Length: 70
Image (tube, rainbow, N blue to C red; front, top):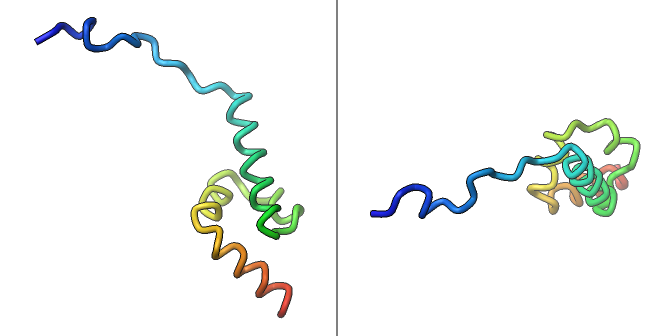
């Protein structure tokens, strides 16, 4: 068996940056708007709610269509 230095070449794992996180969150909100949600509604959602909605985009489209009809 090798030592951990031989197995693990990446000793310092890269950290997630705030700028990258903000960009990801902006892109995710743009995806919801592209699915038909109103921008004002999307702006009020927190990051967890955005992720939960993006897990099932078909439901988002259905929800938007139901609001338009009713």
